[in-house]
Image 1 (cartoon, helix red, strand yellow):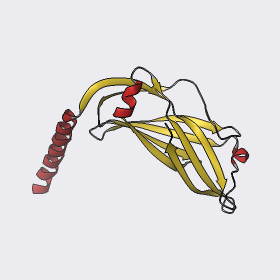
Image 2 (tube, helix red, strand yellow):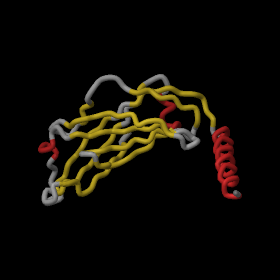
Image 3 (cartoon, helix red, strand yellow):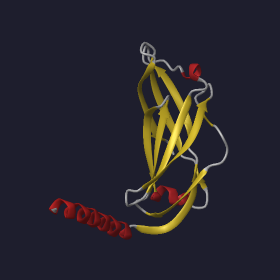
Image 4 (cartoon, one colour):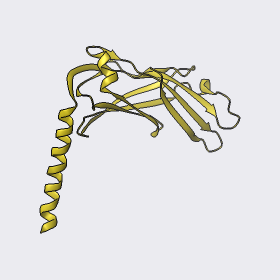
Length: 163
């Protein structure tokens, strides 16, 4: 019986504490679009040479979630890309997603996938995105993939926000 009463009280207390914390970091509301761009460089694990041109048409999926100060998340919002023979990301489809933020602890969680496997992640916060209020942000990423030809699989990968 005591456990049954304790759990709802714990949930209520943690909700109140996170709401109270979020009140302290409220900010002017911003609305912005977000379209990821960038390029992929593929390296061979066997020898280390760049083999990007062999991977023309490589599929990259980007999933974005808007994360609120409270920890609640909306999404995922999905963009699909292929690469040209130089590794440049080419977005499939038209249009873009727009988001609103009103707290300095809000952020966009961005996850990158290749062949269904997560290859990297990034987060972009309110303080960076407020410069794009009323506009569309185009964060540019450098994605490196090391391909293991013997195992026919990704050996390693990194995703780095350039600007």
